[in-house]
Length: 135
Image (tube, rainbow, N blue to C red):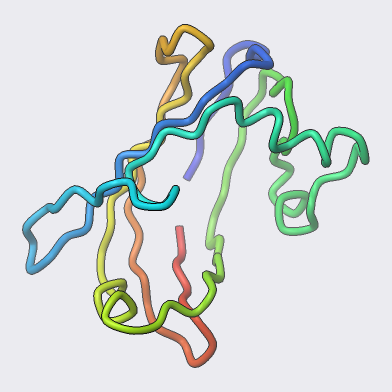
């Protein structure tokens, strides 16, 4: 996955996720439930302040030379073979997690005007200690 940020982004940003699960090829929108799924996350910069104070991003993010705190500066990025571990999901929900997904990530300013978006596809696979997906 590659992209670019054309200009320095404002400090007041929100992210809107549109998550789709494909079940036997049929797209099904995943609703927002307990801050998981197709949700809007307000003022993401406030959640990233801990990294800004340290002036140091987590190792996994540094590996790809991605920014992890606001303001996000103009530049190009490229991510390949990013594996993300997700904690174990039990019960009936765990059986439903496996499969193919599509996610549209929309970056919004304080007026909810769209500044940019990323459209990606990935598959979730069960591992012995949780879930894994690759971008």
